[in-house]
Image (tube, rainbow, N blue to C red):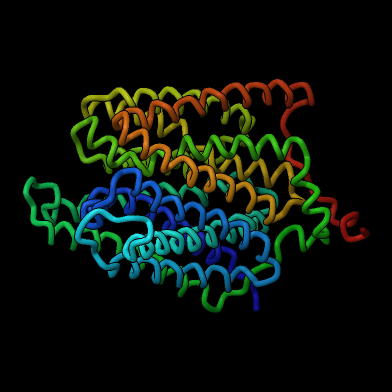
Length: 423
C-alpha cells in the first residue's frame, strides 16, 4: 500500500492541535477546577506536573519504540488516552473540603493528568521523526510548518474556551457554582473532538520507516550521536527554552487575570496567533538566517517580554508586553528540534525524543515552583523569576554564534547511507 504523505502530514498537524488544545483549555479552567476540588495554587501546580512528566516519559518511550511498535499504533494509543483522561477528570468525585495528596479525588486528577501527558508525548514522539523522515531535505521548514499548529491549537482551544465563558456567563460575578462546573467540563470535553478526527485519519494509513532505519544506522550509532558535546549543550538549552515558553503559557490565564484585570486566556490566544503566523508564513526564515542567530534574538525578546508581563497593570500593557514575549518564544521549540535533526541525523527518533522529552520534563519541574511563587509572593513573581532563563540563553546562543562563524557557518549534517549500510 502506498504512503499518502499529504494525509499523514495533515493528521500530524491535527494530532498536534489536540495536544495544544489540552494546554490552552487546561490553563483556562485552572481556577474553576481548583475551586471545585478545593486546591491551592501550589496543589494545582503539583497536579499539572504529571502531565509533563507523562509527556516526557511518553516521548522517550515513543521515540525509543517507534521503529519497533510502529507510528500508527502509537498515535492511535494517544487518541485513546486523550479520551480516557478527559472522562476521568470530568467524572472525578468532588471533595467536600481541602484535600490531601492521598485523597481519592486528588489521585484521580493526578492520574488523569499523567494520562493526558502520555497522550501528548506519544504524539510528539511520533510526528517529529515522521515529518523528518517524509521531508529529509526540508526538515527545519517542515518542522516550523508542523509546529505552527501548536499555537494553532492554542488559538482553537483558547477561543472556544472564551466563547463558552461568554455564552454561559462564567465571567459574571456571582455565577452559580453548578454553572461554573458545567462550564469547565464542557470546555475540557472539546479535546476529544480532534482526538477522534486524527484517529480516523490514520486508521488504515501506511507509515514509513524512520530516516535512520532506512539509512541502515545501527542502534549504537544512534545512541553515540547523543553523547556529542554539541548535543549535550543543546540538551541543556532545551531545559531553559521550554521553561521560558511553556511554563508561563500554562499560568498566563490566571496571572494576567490577576495583574491586568482581564480575561487572561486572551493573552494566550494573542501570543499563539503571533506564533502561528510567524511559524506558518515565515517558517523558512531559518534557511535565510542561521537558526542560532534566530534563537539568540528570540532569547532577548522572550526575556524582555516576560519581565514586562510581570509588571503590567492594564490590558493595553499586557498586550504590548505579550507581543515581545510571543514573537520571542515563536521559534524556540521548532528550531531546537530542527537543529537536533539537522546536526544529529543518526540520532533519529531517539535524539528528537530526548530533546522533546527534556523540554516537557523542564516544565514539569518548574510549574509547581511557579505555583509556590504565586502563592507566597503574588502573581507577578511567577513570571519575573522565570525571565532570568532567557538571559542565560542569550549568552549561550551568542557563544554558539561565534563558534559556528569560526567553523565557516552553520550547516546541516547529512547521513551517508552507503557508509551506514556497510557498517
